[in-house]
Amino acid sequence: MLLSSQQLMMLKIASLETLYMVSVTTLLTTLVGIPLGILLVVTRKGHILENKWVYRIVGFFVNATRSVPFPIFIVFVIPLTRLIVGRSIGATAVIVPLTLAAFVFMARLTETCLLEVSPGVIEAAQSMGASSWRIIWRVLLPEALPGLIMAITITIITLISYSAMAGTVGGGGLGDLAIRYGYHRYQTDIMWATVILLIVVVQLVQSVGDGLVRKFTRR
Image 1 (spheres, rainbow, N blue to C red):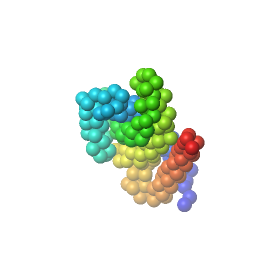
Image 2 (spheres, rainbow, N blue to C red):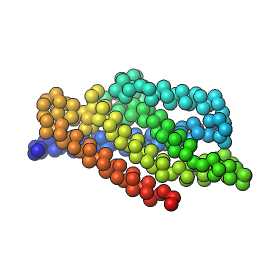
Image 3 (tube, helix red, strand yellow):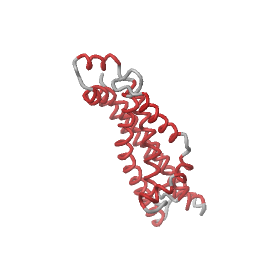
Image 4 (cartoon, rainbow, N blue to C red):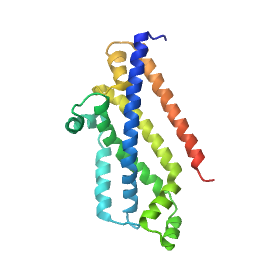
């Protein structure tokens, strides 16, 4: 499979767009999703900041957002996307629905990781007079760090998939290239090139994530 210089240039531009979308969204998702996941854990029954109403409201919001399929979700938030970035198509515009869809996913993954921390460790910190804030920063997050790294890795891979789906509605990136040229214009070489490139990128992300998990796992 040989690509022309023009096709290689299009593939390069699309790859950079995908990298841009995924990088910015990962940053925003991590900044919002992890704190939201912490909130889900510490406000649940029997935890350090138990508050059933906060837990129920946040849990309902997370579940409601996750229940909408991403292609439908993109269309649903178009008014909000236009309000924030001034348009509804393109790489920058797609960051809005990507972030809104991914940070609740990250919140649930964070919740799962933190719930695996031994209650005994938390109780020991409380017995020594540690504040709730200190328990979060010095106990929960360090103990759950390998799991959180894997959660971020899974989120990045999910975002790569979501960004490709965004191409169906003019979102830019590799998905848009595959749809416009590989599907509509029957350029199967472009289609194969995007698929292979996406597979390579996902494998690379997973390998880096696995390596970091091994490094930070406490033996």
